[in-house]
View 1 (cartoon, rainbow, N blue to C red):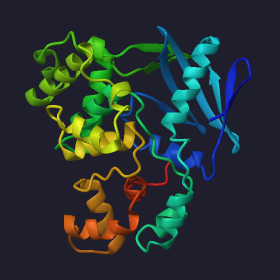
View 2 (view 1 turned 90 degrees about the horizontal axis):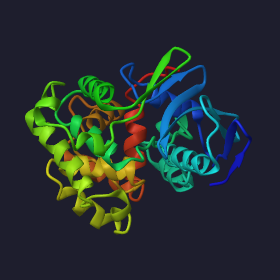
View 3 (view 1 turned 180 degrees about the vertical axis):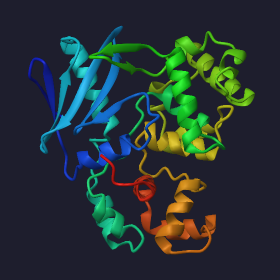
View 4 (view 1 turned 90 degrees about the vertical axis):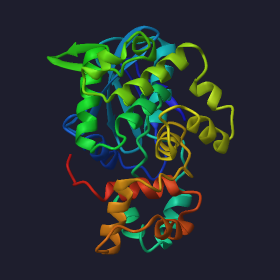
Length: 304
């Protein structure tokens, strides 16, 4: 993915199809979100590069994403890191041609592919963040999951205040590895989730778990390695494969939101069974993650 330097900003060329408006709608779906701020056709995101906090404002000209540095003039190395992060965040290296062709022929996906054309899976490049977020969301509603994440980030993350607004980054595994179960329980984490998250942080501290090591494996082996982590079941493993590893075949088939979206899309009086979903998904082979993401999109409003 090509990017060019413009002093106080960088420009990242965009693939087609791409809809910045749809990406912003996804990013703005919760007013409890604490890791970015959406407004006036832009998203503000705080990143940490080589110990420096860099506040980025991302907008789109249609042909490119424009990333303006708000609080500092980063080094060339830091600019390259920011570019790589944005490319991964917006899944810009994914060629959606095959998905659009498949979805255009699929009776379930066709209306959503047309309405939301160019929407990308908004990814979570950091493995620790992706796993913690997935674990927090287990067996609770999305609203409470966001509440827990907000408490966690504001207690243990780093922040930057700029123009009267405070921006946050997700707590590092280094910071979390030093915590106790009781400290996480104070945030209303269950004892089990607190244990899982501390186990993750400690595994990373010991070098037993890293995204770089997992990327050396093939997709099925990544899934098996994730499933071997305490607290990671099939849904969590598939969610992390989708959101962190850009695996377009990842398919969280037991996802409640997916079931609800299909119930509404198919006009059913009950949620479809796993067997019925797997039969529908035969047509989605190779694009299960994007099919799931577009179906999730059908559940929230137009916003932004």
